[in-house]
Length: 445
Image (cartoon, rainbow, N blue to C red; front, side):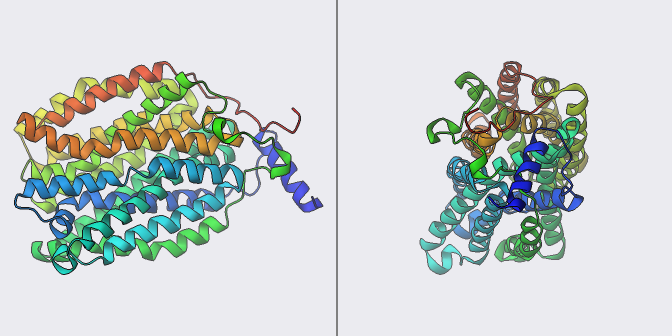
């Protein structure tokens, strides 16, 4: 190893051990992670916002509900490959580096989004159209599943010991930026275009818009520092145990359930635009306000939640907002159903976003802190991808079906309240992770 590499390794070791501040950490470094994360969530979630139009374009059916359910099922297909993405890019993040893994995820998410934007409709090319869309959703899921592990590991590793909550808060906040961007672009499109134009081709605009942001994101990420030690300076961990290295199976399951609770709340919030259009019969332009509100409140309260985690710990933030969700969500949805309006829709969406930003954000801080650096990206990526794939990917389909089966427009609230209660109990089984992070173990240690 040459002197330059040796110095970099020594600096990284001291930095990860909390013995010095990394001089390479600048606002641009945070922006690189946040911008890429926001772009990937924007690409993945804009599908949910335009699910009705996508269903009509690629999954025509005799009944509008059938078309919508099939479209939402394909939205869920994107979650199938998220565990694989979490494992693949988590492993790469722990071995070749966080920066390299995060560059690869940008490429895959972009390929999937452009594919959806440029695919002709079912009326033009027949069965090939839905097949292509499904493949593109699988690529998007692979990329997004691989994003969270390396990004989370990187953010807590560059942060000062007493500000890890705030730094990692950008993980959830940047998701809020992606949601907000999707909502603003969707709302703008609906205001400029007629309903016919929006249904015919306007829904494709957000997917194409994301491609314009890719060069900037790649430029920022290529300038990121690396927080992974050189391979010769760290002990290898077997592939079989890497994903849950340092924690027991019970804690692994508890952490997965906590992440799942956040996923259910988050994806119900993102479903609110479709819910407002299909169930409450609100105009498209009014319904798209839901996504904008979700994005704004998630961004603000994710950063606030990160600061609160640094002051009061992770466990209180993971538990108490979930208890609030159990108490207030059902009455709020009943109020929305009884008095459907822009204001009542905004109130419900704001509450969903606040609960998710505080509790979900705290879990995104606590879970990667459970792992040692040599398995942190893979451990976090695997837990996050499984929790989101099993529960988050089914929320929109399940709630649409529950509304139809029960005849109650408030059915989604009961579903989320139940999951929130289980997530709160799981959070109680997790330790407080604030304080010193585990260090890299040196060879023969």
